[in-house]
Image 1 (cartoon, helix red, strand yellow):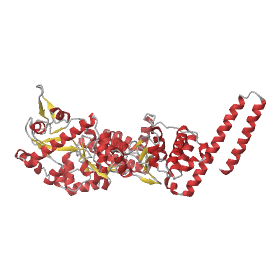
Image 2 (spheres, one colour; image 1 turned 135 degrees about the vertical axis):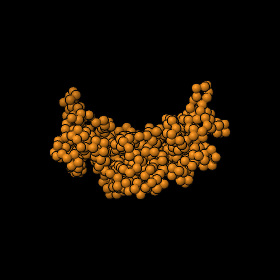
Image 3 (tube, one colour; image 1 turned 45 degrees about the vertical axis):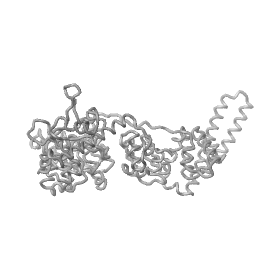
Image 4 (cartoon, helix red, strand yellow; image 1 turned 135 degrees about the horizontal axis):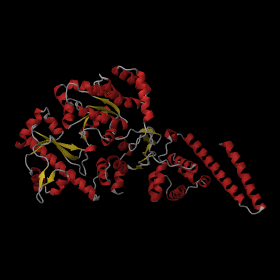
Length: 587
């Protein structure tokens, strides 16, 4: 057994997928909502016996490696290393691709940079001023360690002297990681981060992907924050800080509190709000929403209380709503951001989070805050903003509640708002929905797949070798599968799904695996039900076979050249028709 097979055999696929998808038992399989496309009815199946998964909606499928690669958007080498660690297997002979090696080096460089910055902050004289500053901001020494906060020295080549001079990395590796910037002189580089408090940015797996550097001097002319640019491993729109630390608490609470910056997240964490993440940017992105969806179903947006934070909340609501979250919004009237609230009045912050507004309450209060709603023109602007939002509410009771609430605040009749909501739909252009192409199966394909899946999942594989059953199977892929099954039993007394899989040629393995993903639920464990279904499926296939033969004979009559030949053909048709009638009575 090679190392890839060893890892595959040691990984429990159901447990692995359950870390990202809620799975429920369905007979011998498990099912859940597909994480790779939006759906309301589960079509994502996992077979513990075959250690495979498949979505019948988007048609994606595979094994543990395939799931991790698709879920994390990583290459095979990285998936291999992650699963090897989970399985307790020490990799010996795997050679990573050039791209994988490049990413691994960037992770190494960033990790060493974070260690360098952290050491300077907590253990070196050069970081004393920065240490004093960050402690005065209310960040505890425990948080400095937990979040690996550091300090970049006020030097043009301080980091380079460490990583290039002492650790032997090429300065081009540092440039690819976004740690240095090319100077005007040939072959010259200078450190991107200088005299800043450094926040290492980890992905949810614990890799340092980049940094955010904050100025100590609030009056300096430079940008308050400098972030790592987009690199092969750092993508601003995908990162949530510090998800690698808070993800378990988010899972436990089934809720994530979303804030805007690193200090907001750390301050919240320090006062006991441990299910917190900070977005990198002014609003929640689709990629961040997809990532959070793996850990929880509820979001509480607690962004800055200024107009930019208000706008970011409104954009974030739209993104999160599309991703299927249950949403609430925190309004901090007394403080400018969660950091300040956590530092000055943590109980108030917790209370506001616990009493977060429904999104429609937030939309209404936000609109009135910006437009007041005193004059006719101000009321018109509020209506223009809110009525399209209310018109989209599917629950008629909820819609009625907020139409009434808006009418009271605007001091207008409910009927006028209802009329306006109807106009929204009458003016909206009808755009055709983009849907996944539906693969239509013939009745024969459905019946043959059902029968053979029943036999394999029900531990009745030998039944497929009976003369009667074999005569009913026409599809080439299943004919070949049964031929291979016959060969297998010549060499083996007992059937094993894995041994048979290994026995099969590559071109038949995918079709075989999919048979174990057909959803029979708990009924597959019921031997009486199984026998009845096998018999019923065989009768249905026999009926189909007779009808196909009658159709063939009907076409044949049209081309018969003599009366004698036509008579014989009609006699065959009569026998088949009688047989069909007999079968019909037993079906």
